[in-house]
Image (tube, rainbow over all chains, first blue to last red; front, side):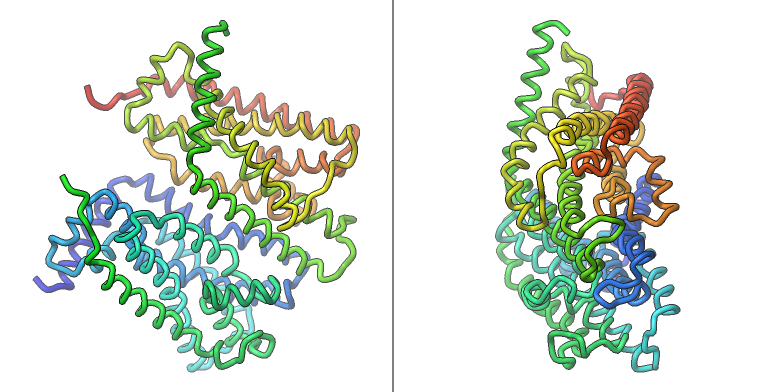
Amino acid sequence: MTLASVAWALFLANVRATLQYRLNVVIWFVVGIAFQLTSFFFLWALLARFRAVGGWTLEEIAFLYGIRLVGHGLTVFVFGGFQIVEWNVREGYFDRYLTWPVPPVLTVLTWWRPSSAGDLFGGLVLLAAAIRIAPVDLSPIGALYLVLAIAGAALVEAAFRFAFAALSFRFLRTSGLMFFVDTVFNTFGNLPLRIFGLGAEAALTFAIPVAFIAYFPASVLLGRTSELAVPPAIAYGAPLAGAVLFGLAYLLWRHELPRYQSSGS
Amino acid sequence: MSAALFSTAWQMARLEMQTFLSWRLNLGLQVLGMLARVYFVSAVWTAVYAGRAEVDGVPLETLIAYLTLANIHVWVIYPQTLDVLPPRIRSGAIALDLARPIGLLPQLVARSVGGIAGLTAIVIGLLPIAFLVGSLRWPASAEAGALYLVSVVLAYAITLAIGIVLGLIAFWTLETNGIGLLYYFVNLFFAGALVPLWAMPDWVQKIAELLPFQTQAYLPISIYFGRLAGTEALRALGIQAVWLALMWSLAVLVWRRAIHRVVVQGG
């Protein structure tokens, strides 16, 4: 069997196992949508009356939100397995990952949870609607940039999950940090960062790179780069950030994997 | 309840409070998350006000104080039983609970009250930080403060019943994680922790007024700031009392059915 077919078989087994609990799948699907859309309802309730936040209209914010949500949906859909590495390492179950004839990281990626489909679905609906109503640059180059930006958005978030998974070989517990970074992405990632003030904007660009997920790409496609606090070139290069960070996370994983100690017995 | 039974309940409450305080890291992160939300909501509303002195007759300062308090509310007044009960039902530990000398519902109440006692101590220490991140202020009057306290107790009593109803669902489904998360987000919105009910679009406000979530943050805090005063404040307490009666009736009803579904794993 080839590598791909083994990974595919593992993935299908995971999907089959999940689908055994049908009601649960439905509930998690709804939760995935509800979780991501609560703050959109918040913005919608505000903008229905006030028209703009920080100079951005509801349509423009919906576009930014859509990029971030599709990126996030892809992260949890494709890279959702990173989040269970910590538990598997602590309990010693990671042993199993080492026995299969595929690299451990591929086995990790075959894990799947139904809420991720909800995230992705909610994101695609929102983005499709936003593209119709917001003044988005949809020239062939603009469209290509959008696709790259979404891939980049997914990779930025995935890089953090990957890195925390890698660090769990050493620290055993990283879910607290993961939860914190996730909260920051979910809370601040969906809005034009300029409304949070310069200090917060700098922190959300360089300390936790939230800006590269949706704020910079949306600014580029909406022709708003002139109002950014960084040179436009950085905003145009946003899709690269995800690839670079993900590469670094992979190196970290390679470096930390040998530290895995089975919990014995 | 006899003295011995009361002391059993008291011991359970104390244990729960100690357990609660021992999860420090988890707690610290929850606090950080809550403060981040206060900062976020405040910043967004400041941008929306865009320099206007007031909107709907509410100055920005008051609104931010409202939102700060509201976010503390939805964090503290959480139906904890929802998370406590399902693992015990799944593992069969529920058999142990049922064998105790006091009924399951009083046990759940004792546990929750212990948990909230631990949390309240932390919240009081946290108020200065919340003040710096968002804003806080004293109640509109001594009367408003007193009515607010009554309203908070009602809000918590309603939450207890909601937690029991949602937790008992696990007797049928064995798992309620999804339901818990869903509750959290629906409550966040309809309790008025992101947008106060008066600032919601009309038809959304009408829906919010028909739901129990307004009892969790919007009503008590409106009393606190004197936005609901006099007969309006009493009417708000009346709405809470109605929800209290409804939710506890539902809790008892669900419990009577759930007891017939007890399946204990293993021998």
